[in-house]
Structures are given as structure tokens and as C-alpha cells.
Amino acid sequence: MLDSGQSEVFVSNILKDTQVTRQALNEISARHSEIQQLERSIRELHEIFTFLATEVEMQGEMINRIEKNILSSADYVERGQEHVKITLEHQKKARKVILSSPPLGSPPSSPEFP
Image (cartoon, rainbow, N blue to C red; front, side, top):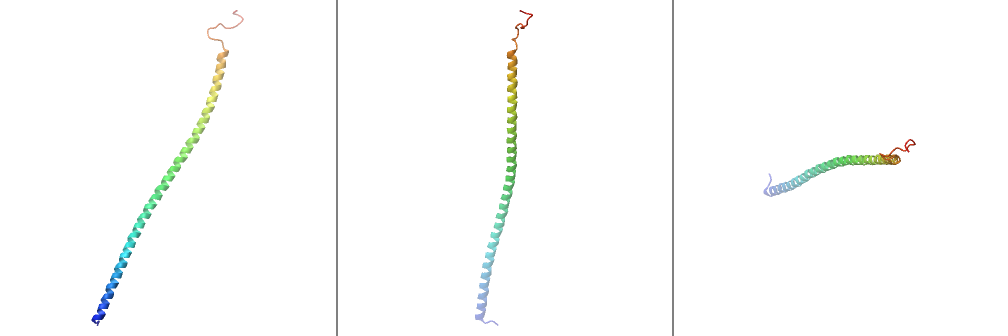
């Protein structure tokens, strides 16, 4: 069997191996925890990017609607200007008619009434 000198060496080697194994286990556990934290961080980052993509899409749609409304407003202004021009022309014609007609209550100017 093993004599006492060899058994001490054997036990000492086992204890060293046990310590090395425990240290390796602790390092592996620490790495595992870090990897899990990294996974959580990556998930959070993915959620942020997904949220931002949705926001950008919604903002793009809103900008498109604003642009459409601005273009429509420009068309309305142009049509309004045309209506104002037409109205001014009608107003000028109406003034000419009023100024060229005799005042109300005055006798008609005809050869029958001297």
C-alpha cells in the first residue's frame, strides 16, 4: 500500500487539484454571469433599435402628411388669388355700370321730355 510519505503527497495533490478545480469553476461561473448580462444588454439594445425604427417610420409618415398639407395649402392659395382677381374684375365692371347709369330719381334724358 501507500506509505505515509506517499499518502501525504497524494492528499496534497488532491487538495491542489481541488483548489484549481474550484478556482476554474468560480471563473466559469463568473464568465457565465457576464455572458448572461451581455445577453440581457443585447436584448435591451434590440428593443431600443426596434422602438427607434418604429418611431422613425411614424415620423416619416407624419412628415409626408405635413408635406402633402403644405402642397395642398399652396394650391388653395393660388386658387384664392385667382378668385380675388376675378372678383376685382367684376367689381370694376360693376362700378363702371353704376357710374355710367343715371342717378336714381332723376328724369330720364330723352327727347320727349325737354
